[in-house]
Image (cartoon, rainbow, N blue to C red; front, side):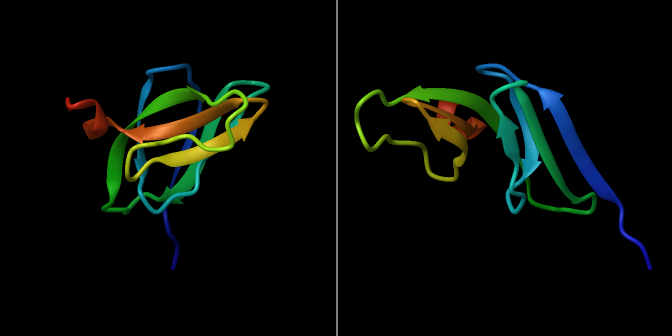
Length: 90
């Protein structure tokens, strides 16, 4: 028995849209700007996200929309996949 795996490995910048499984754990490398994820190609929980950049400066908290995936944070900047429907459009 074998399984097909969907792989996402692409460069992203602010406001790019990408479909990713809600159950996936994507990663983001701020050095090369690449979003990476691997999950079952038969996944039935893909959702459209918008790659977002949050600036939280000296604060120790910041708000994201429900269902967001925080990919990376540090030095006052967080990279987040925000559900596209949080922007009020699809």
